[in-house]
Image (cartoon, rainbow, N blue to C red; front, side, top):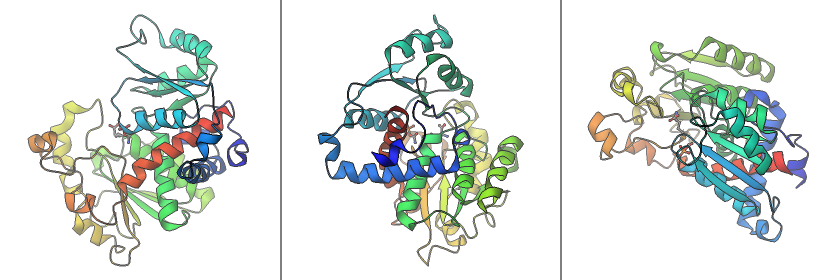
Length: 333
Ligand code: CP
Ligand code: NVA
């Protein structure tokens, strides 16, 4: 496919969005839109693009979307996916990351990693000799942002000039990655969070530098009232990420005023004129009957918003498949 081979990512890894050019990121989003149409037309069956390629998936953390999207993206295009949970392999226990990388690099054509430290995915890329893709670390979640941008592009028909407000834990992997991804796409970004959960200065500086060249803004607001004004996309995420279960109660206290409800949607000023969508990377606590939310009361979004017609969370989840496919194909064909 011309769209993909001309992106210039052949043989390359994707560990953070900041490592690819703005044009390459947008080209991946456009390629995903083309791949979605191609899959719906059944064309991938006639002409699979990575026949015979073997890809390893190393997961230290749980996953529904990233795991299934990656496996099906690979299978759609004739490749083979091997899921390696950390309980299945010696990784990080009897065998170092560096040694595992060198072994897997001799056997596989690419590796997708989900886990804790960004350093681990960087080491895999450094020593495996094959493309490595970051399927989420504590710091970054680049493939999710490709799907978010695809969903926004499909809904609005454009990205540049939109405003996205991320409401919640303003220093987690999603906040970091959206900040950089929006800046690269020309989308104004507001990180709406309590002061205690503000993003790191280095991340804000990185994103601000990118935003300046693309004519958009990056800002942090501690007001769930004012911070969301003018937003076209209201975005939230869980209040305690994987690995942070111990701070759940503390987060509940800090983040309760930041719950996304209909009143917050109204305050964007864009609900009535149809220029607002709600997005969430998922999984989401939105239903007081789920076990965790029943025990903790931790709901980052109400059912009313989650189930509203302007909520596009399942389009967004589907787009994980098409964007991960675009990324893998860009590295391998
Ligand atoms: N959004 C996302 O990464 O979902 P999973 O944790 O299910 O992969
Ligand atoms: N911030 C969340 C994202 C899940 C897709 C986590 O890391 O658990």
